[in-house]
Length: 519
Image (tube, rainbow, N blue to C red; front, side, top):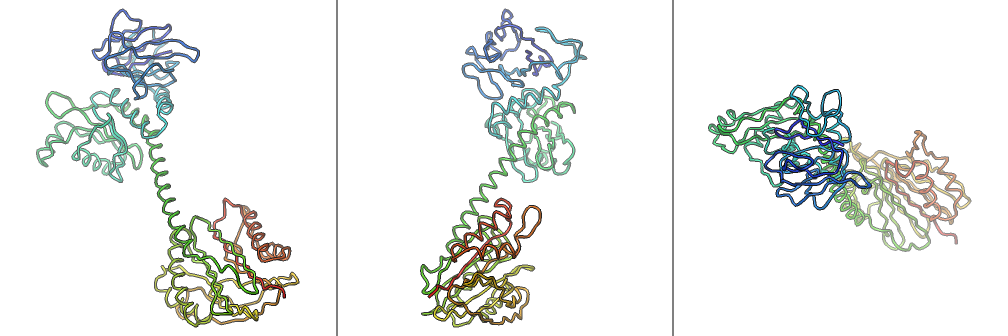
């Protein structure tokens, strides 16, 4: 096992751990580190059944593992970033990528300058693994990675992850550190102007800027783009003559950005998840509103059995229906589809249903009602959008149906003798396609035992994963196999969803079955 020291004058030193012992400043301990922030007996390494463990010995400045304060003892994992005082070291089982030489370094061996290497990809990857093991959430991972950076990178006192497109801070270290508005503004401007290059603002440049803009809080910094949206901001020491500028090699910058890639990716995933959560919350609200607009049908209709199913492809959809009694012996059944899914389709659907209810308060027949909807809806529809509607007014005493179609598929008749009849009705034009829409009123007669089936295009256009259409033949097989309106409705819905796959259904599905009872 090895501890690779990455801080200050100890950078490049490797401790080979072969026996239990104490880490501390005292020269007499097994693993001595000469640093004033390290206690004389700081921490102890012990063997156990699960490998090496580390415990703090009541040190003045504490011991950290992956940015978290060590309390008690803890098993070490490959790539763990250990902090004792201000000294940072990385636990690894092999030396690959850490030093260059013919063999492993011995205990307390400090390699000559020409033998030193920066932490290589293997070690950085191990450090990332340690961060992920210790910190489950992405924000904590990023904060721990940033804390490791300011210990490893010379001169850096603050580190931040910034969304340079949105102008937001995503994470920062040390905990509670504030980035001045002047520095943040200049860093964001630098990232936007040089999205593929490193921007370095020196002490002198910051002093000049502070004098010209009266922004004394601007500190020297390095802005490093991690990807097309996220950048790393490393702030240097105070801008005065006693402190040099932050000076990093390309190799060090490479390590810094590599160290951030996984935590940043995780942060962005969490942001996306939060957006999805907010979106889903909005969709659930829209769904509740839509369900209130889509009023349930009458509980009973003299002489008829009614069955309805409504399945949006998303939480909300563009399909709509409306069923209500008109007078003593008339039933209005309307079904339709707004071109659009999700919230946009639902918004237009809400407007349409409100208008439709208003039109039903008049004495208009199905054709006149659809023409009135055309005149009121077309001006508010976006270019390219349209609405299809089927309006069926049923005389519940005689079974006579008056039908008006605006671009919607005609209802299908399943007779009492279990035959399926296409009524050959003119589908007409959708609302929104022609300002001068003229709807022809058409009629059909329902005999006792006949069932009228109205659907949206989720039935007509349903496809399976192979691109095969559900088709009228499968539909008709279901219709002739069932006895009642309720059976037809449930069987048709089940058959279609099983054919297209419940998880890949891309269209809303509404089915209305209206059967005239047998005498």
